[in-house]
Image (cartoon, rainbow, N blue to C red; front, side):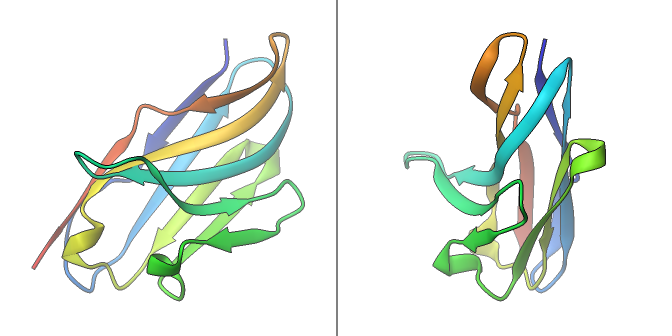
Length: 119
């Protein structure tokens, strides 16, 4: 059974940094695109950053220059380095990945990790 497990969330002051990690586990043949999303209560989940299996990246305008997405294919892990955090970055962050396994090719979500930025 494929699972995504996030870690690294927490409480930080404005201007501080956090590094989120997301590890995919299970019987995995390959992983395609991976990404980070966030969801503010009452709003739709939105893309924060994404990275292809080849390392191409894209970012939401509201994090450009502050966040960096990266991945370690050998460890089935994607990271999100978040710098210059703002109070408006406070919300739950979710990992997403397109994974090929015995169940076919599916998109999976992690359980989410809370990021809280105090002013």
